[in-house]
Length: 586
Ligand SMILES: [Ca+2]
Ligand SMILES: [Ca+2]
Ligand SMILES: [Ca+2]
Image (cartoon, rainbow, N blue to C red; front, side):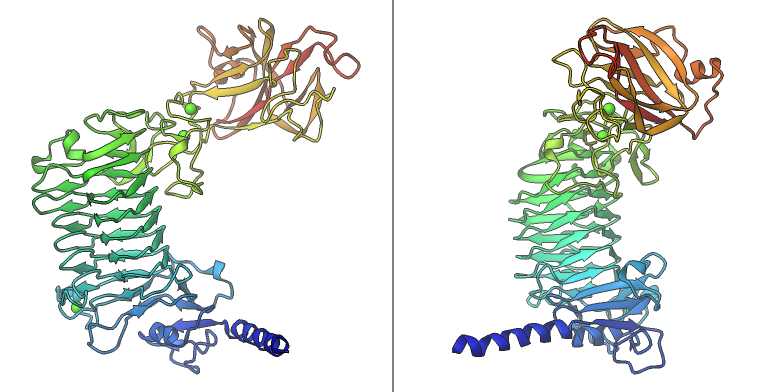
């Protein structure tokens, strides 16, 4: 009986919670309407519109904020901040007309949370600014801040109330908020953590920039103590503090940094580390690029740790101690590394001591150029679970055909550093693995990504692979897992027969204008072309009447003799077979 009475009440509560979930609209520039947040036309108004929306928001709500400048208060009270709430998602970047979250543009509509209460920061007056812009309170990961610039916090107050820490965001025990697509710019404090102070909390920062924050005694961007924070695809640029230019992990701060960039940060004090300073913590750095950081009065400007931490798939180069000298100690101290590029040379499996060949390191473009030895040199096993993209959102594992795979794992291999060099040379296609609408003619389905099976019991089907560059043309095609010593023909076409067509014991997709580029004899089932003395593919194609325009595609497969007439006999098959295919982008 009690159950019967309770069930409808539970149902009613669930319905009520669901019915209450709403979008709260905020528009600083609006001067008409009901100022109640129920629509763009009736959005909460003024510089404190977001504060009003937060005051009325409950779990399940979203807050949509139009581009513009917002402040925690219209008064001069420095202790007032924006308070994150469990279950409330706060989005900036709207133009005030959107009906879908996906329609906003955070770049076109900068939405700024400013602690410059008096509007006089341009006169270098910061002593009247908010202590913090954001307080995480005890909100969990369902509390989201997404699409804002957070600036002008100045935590120069009393230590006892933490008003000397975390000018941008303050996350204390029990908080685990999510921050995405944000920029923390020119926040400051006197203790540590110009952008943010974290103690006993586990926040997550994704796709967020920390720029020109000033952290006082300790971390320029972050000062962290107790707790595991997560930083994915974040960038730390131009931050400054006495002890840790960008990030200080002080004690039991085992934070995770994946696909992050640390560039141009400065530690100004004795014992300082330019980018990352670690004490009694085990932060986990994977695929991070740390370059151009400076330690003014201590040697180590990249990562300085005690006791030792382990990093992997990272690039730590061009960091400078006093006088700007370049050597190992300027880049890392107290660090064990694997599959990383460390200037000055650090012993460890897979480590390099070489120029990573950034596209433009001095200009801050830390993508890898096509001949970078850091491409395909990382360890796939060190990619944190769930990581599928690089700093820029490109696939985290892509083959660079121009360099040999020197890292660890099954190709495609991850690159060192935050950026993965995308594979722009080729796409594999035409697999005899059952994925084409035309099956292998005798049920001789090959392995994943291979051609159809041939008469060699140990072959999973022949594979066409590629190395080199399109411009200049250094492309070399290699057919493997054919039969041991058979003749083969490197075939080029101008079209993709997407369904495939039976071709001997295999399936061919190369169509259009066909050219037989090279005839070779396999050795051990492998043949490459062009070889010594052969014209390049583009030169050979031109000789045969097909001048390949830059920017166009051509299609390739290699067909080869399989004289075992009993394997896939006529009329279904024949005495030849063909590899998988490649589409090359010239
Ligand atoms: Ca000010
Ligand atoms: Ca790669
Ligand atoms: Ca490669």
